[in-house]
Image 1: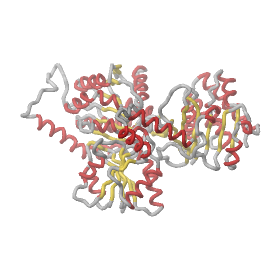
Image 2: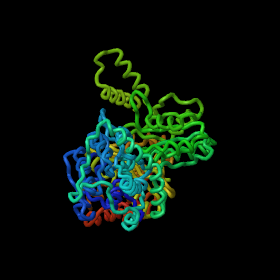
Image 3: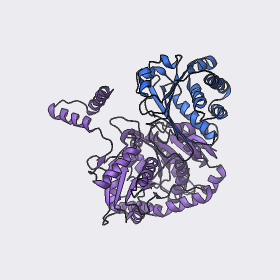
Image 4: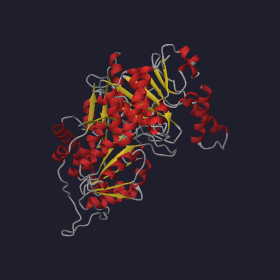
Length: 417
Length: 190
């Protein structure tokens, strides 16, 4: 049924419909509304015999789920930012052990400087841990991807992160078509684990593996992601068959036919980008867009097949590999190796800076007309940066950079007021 | 598409106001999106919330930079924040104030923006009367509906009932009724 609902509430409803058996969560903004709602639902007895554990940390949360999942329970948690980094060791363990845990990432910047707003630095820091990473375009897709994530995780025995933009989606109040229990039950079978700690049939999980077999175990983890490249579109199609709407998949195209320039992005910014594409098309620019829904596995071949005729790909990404530039764009470049296609990197939206349609249009036009420096930073305050660089040259004790920048911005806004 | 920006302070229910607008629009069969300007959720700190109301899918995720309608729930912000930034030259301003529009100290600004319609009404008083607290968000939502006609009265009532329960719901419906009646019977705009 369609409802005007907050993204976090909608996701909590969707997770509840998936009948998780153990949830262990530690609240952190902007994920809090999701886990608060789920804890209330468990307390009210709305999620069967599900156990909700209050834990002392994010590390504790995922560690509990590793145990519960190994016991054959369907498991769920949610986190973001510093919370994800705090659980990092367990993130690798869950994937290495092949435990099908589903975790929402309410994407948020990673400090320092401390910042609670949205970008993709957190999940990007865990991109090589072995989890599948699916990115939602809007709250409808966030709901749908959670239901697909349990299917995918349990079929492959591999953990899945569903990434949704913190605040921009978690706190947005928009229309979502919430599924009913019968639909979810028809789509999501009971969890049948490939490995389980069972006193009647004892095994150990988590063996120490030396040089004789470690590489083979890692290869098989990689192979699972290769299998996911086939499973994700199939599971997305089966979702559409039951729920009557397209959702998820490896990637989605918008006016890519005959597009000379294709803008590629992850997550909710694709909405603004589509509006920009419409405006640019109306002006005669042959522009299209691609939403990368599956970031892990990275759909290199599908992407290459779709964009091989394009002259230019402009990757707009909410992350920064410090000392390098783009993370996603580097992977796009490898996917397109040998093709003449130019790949531009636009670093945007860091720490919650709004990405406006006007700025997207300007960046795309500049890329087409004169090319972009690599990497290109969208809407950067170069004046404030220059003054800080001069300060650092002029005095040894130039002071803390974040504080200096805040003072710069404060001063400049006073001047313009 | 109508783009609305609401200015208030932490604790005044500004984010709820945006959600009520979206709920009412949804009930009217429209498409709506509401979201807060995230961050400083401290009591008393300036808070901004946004709502877009249209008839087809709303894809944009950028904050409302060029509103058609400004709802200023706390008039002390007039002298602190750049509340008018980006407002459409044919925009509408609805102010929560016991003062008349001519008494708001906006004469120069209004001369520079002759097509902007400015309305002022005592939203906090209606809240104080029925809720015992001057939380004016519901009155602002009803005021928006009354002035613009973009939302029906019954949908505003529906949104209130969906958000609040029991006595809070009843009292807020009375607040909304007062706001509707006042704005439809008084000359409050310039």
